Length: 342
Image 1 (cartoon, rainbow, N blue to C red):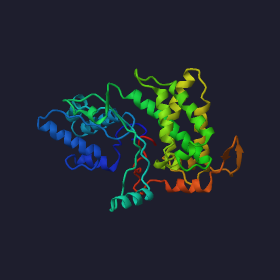
Image 2: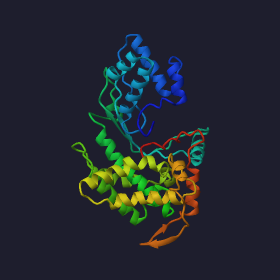
Image 3: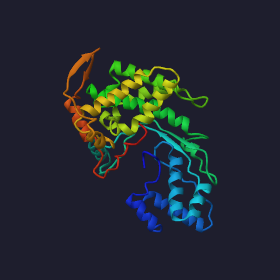
Image 4: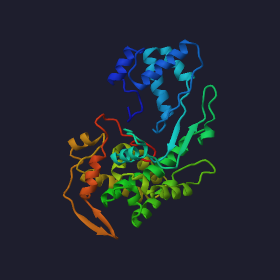
């Protein structure tokens, strides 16, 4: 369950796997079945390496596998708990959700249709916790960084890259900017985001040799890449889930240090304004909040301040783009919706 990081034992697929462990349906069920086979065959316990981009992904996966295994066979759960390694990993790469324009461009270049090409920026960082049960491939040869603790790198990405992305998305939508590259061309917004990064950097503890200031400067150059066409509406999705690790955690740390939180509060206020004025809010809490009357839309007004258009009712084109940014009807996020730069 996303809110708790625990196994959703009431999910129909998990219920199925608990009663049919040899014919699983869920991803955890398949992994547990494979681990059970290795254990029964007397093979070495493996390392299960996450390739998603969720915070503390290895720790979370290990918890889910051990719990599901224990529900099937207590001794299997104990074996997974003690013997199987699930290292944490972190990917830093901006991967916008695929659009119809991307599909058309790829089809024209390849002469064939690709239903879901993945568009990404040139930059790539892959950080892996160096904790494996029986050796490992030479991941460094393909550019990965092996570390004893992924958490500092993850915190830097969340509080600088992802926090800046959220701020750009909500403020950019309010002033009518459809893409990140458009938004950072606004001097006031560029200055604001750089200040937000400096504020966030004061809450980080990074390993020696990591240049947080240089990371922020490089990010602004990455954000300005017009070829990505990274839509602010896409980044704005699911804000209630994204803002706590991106903005609220840093705000708490700054308050504990007696530091001001004006820039972080402004980004949160932009999110509040966004959910109050957007015709369709794509967020797990939208239904519950709407039922309680928390996300009612006021009448729109607009004014200019400092050369930047401020609007309580986002421009019609931005609202339309936001509605088109919703994931497919499967309920699963489109590629990039939980990616490195979302």
